[in-house]
Amino acid sequence: GHMAGPLALARRSALCLVLLATQACSVRQYALNSLGDALAGGGATYASDGDIELVGAATPFGLKTIESLLEEVPEHRGLLLAAARGFTQYAYVYVQTPAEELMQRDVAAGYAQQARARALYVRARDYGLRGLRLDKDNVALLYWTAVAWSAAISLSKDDPAMLAGLPEVDKLIRRAQALDADFDHGALQTFLISYEMGRPSSSRDVAQIARKHFARAVALSDGEQAAPYVALAES
Picture 1 (cartoon, rainbow, N blue to C red):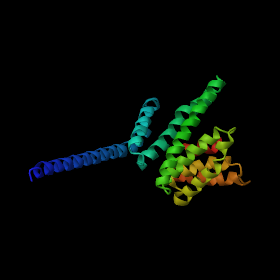
Picture 2 (picture 1 turned 90 degrees about the vertical axis):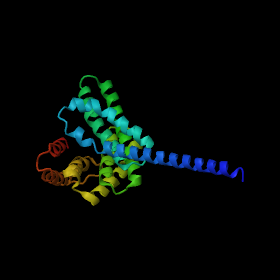
Picture 3 (picture 1 turned 45 degrees about the vertical axis):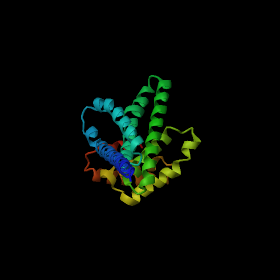
């Protein structure tokens, strides 16, 4: 009887500590998820900025912030998509494209820059695959994972292990087509122009197929995007 009071108080105190810790953990998780949601939805801010150099300087910090958050909330689908999309876009605009220009002056430096682009594409692909394990029918994840993977393959013509991923890329693309062929104002249709023209097993009427994708991409973007025209010209 003498110990009942202190023991009961100790139990109540311990229970309170457990509840407080659980609540704190829950609040922290909520805060991390909320921050993740905000970061995942912030891509439009970058895309609409007219100062491309400013965007290029700011993007690495944003991408590393996303990666840091993913260590805390590894199954945040929005962050996984943002990472797949962000690393792909950054690699193409700020690493691979300058590498192609650099090749004209310094071949060794150009190849080194291409290797960096390839590594960033692989990083983007891996984030996309993580997201697809959580949501296999997410068209945006299917699209950006396929774009990143195919870009990495295009810079790895001498790597049989990387080339072996082509059938998997094709599965992602066909799944995205089946779910939403008109995704993102014709982004998928634009990608298919180059993809169909570059596939090893392309049929003889591949140019006609590519032009159908081109026409659809132009229609979906109201003729206001250069990407379909660039893709057709380059292919």
